[in-house]
Image: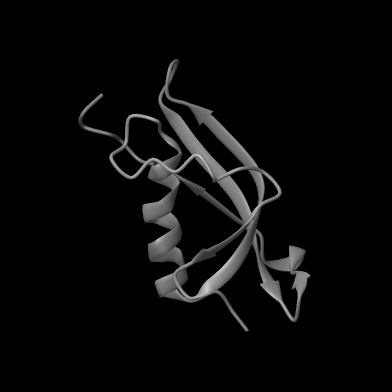
Length: 85
């Protein structure tokens, strides 16, 4: 199974939810947590959330395949410019 364009679209949206100022802020996004993002379950490997300093929101995730974290398909996703900041 490969990561689909739809997966990337959902990941690109969800990374903004790391920012406490975002309307869809979700504090359950934590390192080590499994999240269903779109139609794929990902393990959150690392989070960088600097909304109070430089505005950076990023996370590294890996899909779960057959119950195992597929570390050969790690995705690093980050938020772009937030025009509200």
